Amino acid sequence: MTESWPCPALREFELGPRTTLRVGGTVAWFLEPATPDAFVEAWHAALERGFTPRVLGGGANLLVPDGRLPGVVITTARMGRVFRPGRCEDADWNDPRQGDPSTGEGAEERAELVAWAGMPLPGLVRVARELGWSGLEGLVGVPGHLGGGVAMNAGGRWGEMWDVVETVRVLTTDGEVEECSRSACEPVYRDGNLGGAVVLGAHLVLARGDELEIKERMRQYLAEKSAAQPVTERSCGCIFKNPDPELSGGRSAGRLVDECGGKGRTHGDAIVSPKHGNFIVNRGRATAADVLYLIEDLRSLVRDRTGIELEDEVKRWNPVPDREAGGEVPA
Ligand code: EPU
Image (cartoon, rainbow, N blue to C red; front, side, top):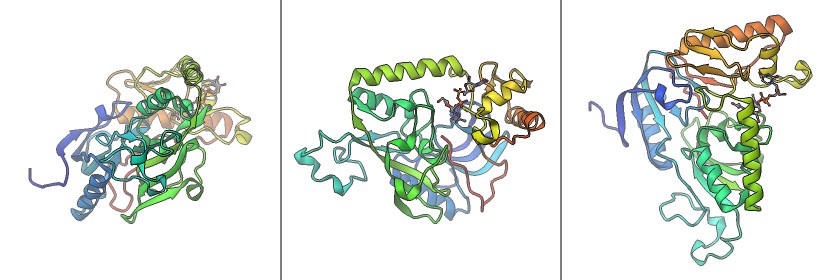
């Protein structure tokens, strides 16, 4: 190693396998901190070396460019922890407002969890289900990690991430660690409204529920989702945000693509899913260029036929990092 980092660091790391779409090239340095504190250290170490780090979570809503990225990607993959506040000895933030956890006083009554940014959403949903705690059912089948889920307010028709977020701990663009409440953040549709801050973790408040009812709701949502979306294929989720229903007559982005005849279009090994018009699927060896081509193809198709301008939901990294711009935070 020519440089030393405060956490495990890999050179010339291939990013495609770390995304659900499985496209994209390599990065010069790939840092793997295991705690929120280590993440902050890695962040500052990268800045000291002149890099604006990009952050990779579950890679579920991200398009990584082909080729080689110079600089640094920090992954939250090793920060996959969830615990009950005040019950985890090595947790580095136990909320003092929770009282003394050692007495257990009230701890059994509260349906609260702290999750770090790298906690996979499917695992989080499973934990809630096993505890019989309600509030996360709407996220069943949503890939990615907590960090990205909070940053972009992941979700769908049955619920979204911020339904259960009480506070979020972030690393601001100024490099400060701050706690931000739901009312201060004012999350909106598919946007946690964090102003580019990186999510380190979140404090979640759920509701005690009936385990069987929670399981049944999840089963039903998952069945509906699997019937409508290519959930088992390689994609980065919905490509476009749903447009303002007043402009689109209530039609979703997928339905607009469908009505305009965009389903099934291909470029290289990328295809607009024949099942759902707002998904692009990697059939095997698709490149980022193939996917980008289809995104613009669909956008102009819908614009020409309807006058509606579809806006990206998927995040992209620019091929050449811009020290000023920083990186996007994926789901
Ligand atoms: N539709 C079509 N043709 C298509 C696709 C959809 O006619 O090709 C119709 C459907 O029949 C339905 C309507 O469009 O009447 C809406 O479709 P769907 O129920 O699949 O929901 P969506 O609005 O396309 C949203 C989220 C999804 C989330 C689902 C379910 C956005 C952009 N998408 O999709 O989230 O899974 O609701 O809750 O908000 C994601 O964020 O990556 C994502 C997939």
